[in-house]
Image (tube, rainbow, N blue to C red):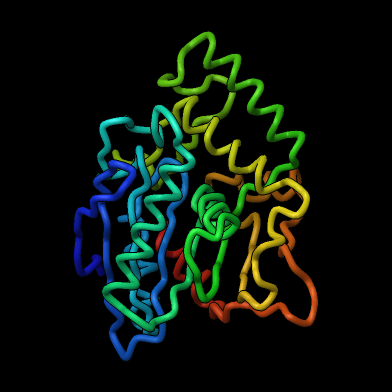
Length: 269
């Protein structure tokens, strides 16, 4: 089933976000705010949103800058922004969060991120930009701080040679059978976007990066799996499993039922 609504949300970053909304099909339990992955768009999550709506969740899913139908003067396809891309994408996520708070006051908000969207979601949590009731991050492309710094050095060399608007020749282009059928997916990210992405990953890999996140926050983290961005089993072999920022009696997990993963796979997200 398609989303119920498609809107344009103007944000303080100067973006006109393409935003999809799916309303809960029963009494609402919470709102799930989706952050999509690299080289795709939020419309790809319609089946996932339909699944959640059938279980009492409103769903809001925005196209990030440089993706899908979102427009901004300081960007182009495959780029967050020519300057301050990280700050602007976090501002956009906060704007959607604020919209949810206005339209559903009192309902808890669960932040969801897939792959690149997981990096954005964790960066949003780390900066404590807005309070959330819980978070789920799937297929987070975890890398060591050293590897992230090395990638940034390579990207700086490419930026010097090719400019920030060009696709990277050193980092792979992601293309799957599903994205080949959708002209809005699978395009190569620019050097600028890769640089912003690895800048966030460097910050997330710092010791104590999550120290400000409450130990009582329900947090569901999953890495690897059938995901075109993290490379499925290849990523499992290349990177260690992602562990929660906190361990101990205070931790809780979001009770996403196992069938969500199945609908995720069958929907081809």
